[in-house]
Length: 375
Image 1: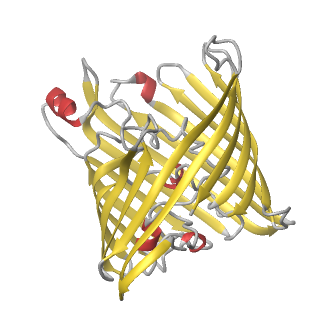
Image 2: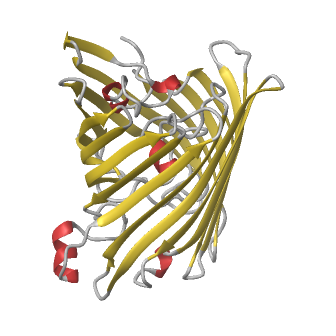
């Protein structure tokens, strides 16, 4: 069985202009039924050990925990060259079963244009589109600044439809869609409660536009770091808006957010490749939730050595993020870590020291060791 280097949707798009990046286009185990007809299966897991200051039950000692952070099953298939699809699951919060996070039909209208319909990530920033499996150092590290990935019941996914397309030899990638919106904003209630509270059922509209000056980045779900396999200089902007999308027990208002992000990665800088990413965010809930509106920033830098040490390559990294909320609560987190890259995003181990500062709260130091495998 070949390794699955990008979720099962990479298989669904493997012969189109909207496929995932080159380093991530290998399939899992695949059964073919004829030309352009197949079913593919894969799975992934992320498990970790954590030691968190004041995280024990007494509130004053370090916690020591092993955790299955993620367990996923990837399915994809193709009826013909025009109709494909994917079904991905994730363990539920209790870890006793699975929930559907992606269930989408993909209709390839032209080599550069496709329509996605079902449940999937709505267009947003690079950090959210890369997710926990394809980010610098692993994990959804930018969750303080990029407040999308674990919101709602489907790990940031939403029900809707989107246009996904490329132009200018795939240098320009753009997507735009309409979505239910109830899982995109973490403090919106479930659908029936939202509709009852606001008296109308407006959709959430979301879009992303990015341009690659060096190597191209075809694909919808993104990658946060190419581990030294590409020269990347890409800028992107994204936004989403929903009328009456912020709903509390006593108030309702407009929800919108927008962001800008940058990824630079260069091979052959000394004995390896260097990378840098940065992003800016603005969130607004029409003053319904002051704790969830404000400005945010994130940045990360890494260096991966070309020469292997044993089974894999070493990649030290540093990450920083900040969320300055309108309720005057400031969150800042700094991470220092090193990843051991055995087989790209299919097999890697990382160790991270994290320092969190929050207004009017004691600082928190944490240490994590994480194993990631995908098949």
